[in-house]
Length: 161
Image (tube, rainbow, N blue to C red; front, side):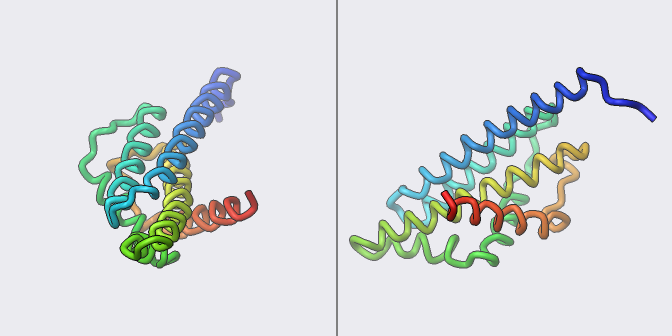
């Protein structure tokens, strides 16, 4: 049995600190993507933010960041979360088609969904990387329940803010 050295503990703390900053920044950009007035372009921007976040997290964990399956994994995760919060992916962008208040309602809906989804995806990947996982062995199906739990936790945290 090996014991953790002070250096090992510091390295884990450092990567968690860096990861937290990466996720926090991505959550902010996710909220900003929601104000894009063009319906469904906001969702494309959100996906771009999330892909960059996961690539940055992979870099923080010194994992290979060049994986073509990353977009598919994030799309699958968003699909899972879309089923949990149907309004987030479908109603929000569509509401922007309604002149006036529709744009505001759509931005709020997409912003709330996007921020919570980005946080949840980031947390799931941090856990995956903490357990020695890579982008190549990541399975969106295997983390469905964890993803839903993180998403609900993020939604709860945003309501209490």
